[in-house]
Structures are given as structure tokens and as C-alpha cells.
Image (cartoon, rainbow, N blue to C red):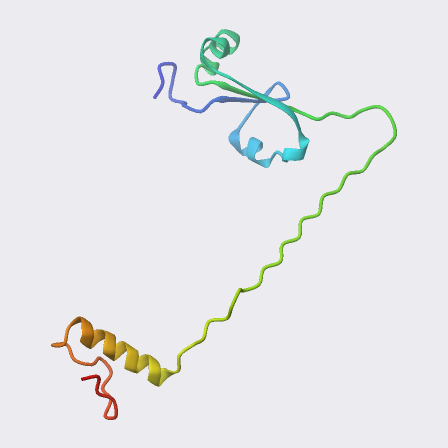
Length: 120
């Protein structure tokens, strides 16, 4: 809680219009021309109680006179595993699970009984 009300978030202004954090999150970084952050007495003096928690001012790029230009950005991500994991077969898993169980508490005995396998 702040002194001036319930809201603790800063005032967000995009091109001079009050906006929300959702609109700020949707704004593409390439579209931002400049941004500034005001806090303390300067923000309160300019915007009153609404600026008490600070102000984030963002100016987006505007159109310019002249020939039409085109900018493009392409992002490509390729992932592949560094190595493949070797999987155990059922019998080996059973032997290792029983061995781990008996090592932790010999009173428990093997979880999966096996006639051929005895870790002791």
C-alpha cells in the first residue's frame, strides 16, 4: 500500500497516453525510439498522485517522409541433444533397484523378488 492509494505500480505512458503493463509487454523492442523513467518529486510534480510510484515514459518510432523502406528480422533456433541417453533393460533396472533398496535398509529386502539374483 502506498500513501496515495492501493496501486504500487508505476504510471506507464506510451506516446503520452496512459497504458497498462500488458500493452507494455506487447510492445516490440524494435518499435521503441526512447524511454525514460521518472521518480520522486519530479514525477509527483508533473502527474500528481498518479506519479507517486514513478513514471515510465516510452516514445515509439514514427513515420518519416521519404522513400519507403523495409526491415526484416529472422530468428532461427536449432536444437539437438548433445548425446543420447542409454536406457536400461528391465532386468538390469530390477537388479539395480533391488541393490539400492537393500543398501539403504537391509531389513526391507528386495522389492522385486528374483530367484537368479541375490545382491548379498
